[in-house]
Image 1 (spheres, rainbow, N blue to C red):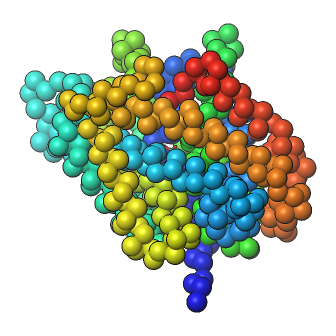
Image 2 (tube, rainbow, N blue to C red):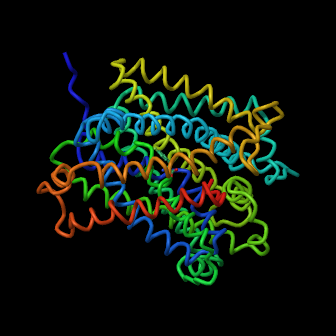
Image 3 (spheres, protein in one colour):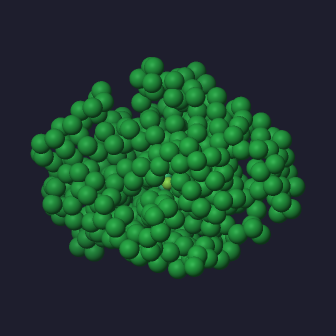
Length: 462
Ligand code: PFF
């Protein structure tokens, strides 16, 4: 007997779960950093355009493929487009698998910084502690990395184990309001700092002479990562949407919330950075620098109410990461459930455990472990962690995204996509013709540009 497919309990439940997937380290960790690297304003404007012109149409495409077929990514593509497309689905599952394996490691760092900052708040910062050096020490400590990643993996598995409504949706309903609340507190505190004016000008005043062509592609590439597109996560979440919910409205809401949160995170970080003399010059170098090296120290020296906000900030990072890791594990798990008939609980534990083996490889990349810390497949990338990140961001997400645009725009019939988007629940502003134009022409051309830049010009978006 075939079991009934699980569904989100309501439209709000679904929007929160999908927004939880979208909001993650990409918003708090990557977006502020690439905005910084690309000199702010003009980059942000281009990013907003990419989100609207490419991200939103692909979000709708993934959700509609999921809802139409009521299957996870492999089955969905096979049914919606044709049996050969199962390969594209598998590519997505593999991408989810790899991304989850190293994303968990970064998520683990937030647990470490939470315990440290909570300790400093309660017991004071130890005399002579160089907070900035802590990052290098903790990543090089392989047993610690193993433990932190294990904790986070167990948390992820525990959510997905309980399924769509009782696991994923329930956690999203509980945690997203907390996440928004913490962000607002941080924003209020940041806006009170002396550098907030400069931060706002940096983010919102475009100066196009400062934007390199590569920055445009970076904005585009990031729009995939931040919206959880290109690997079937939204196809999978879409497969749990019921017929009475509007895909168009939900997509618009998810994209809007994700973008607002990325902007708020940037305002917070830049307000702090611009408030401290000499800080702007120090930030530079690495993506992790801002989140885990510069910020912890500043919470205790500069940020108003920083002793309370510091630990809360790392709670925020951990919650944002968890609502993303659970969607990644769901991509892999739902494939095993749907295509191989395995029961959810068993599938979740088996997939979680298998992914964790690769998480260990990423977790020990920063120590002194032969091969895992020295692997050098791509120019300028050392170790398993950086190699995996490079492969996913540059090769897997764009190719997966291109396949989805082609599937929805060129291989599915007009009638089959129209019936999902124009079903009486869509908002009045929505024009199917406009979506079709974007998904057939604008999005594939834009994504092809990324692929060409990576394949032929060695561009790097990781
Ligand atoms: N959107 C997440 C972020 O911005 O951190 C990353 C991500 C999560 C990508 C889940 C893909 C996915 F399926």
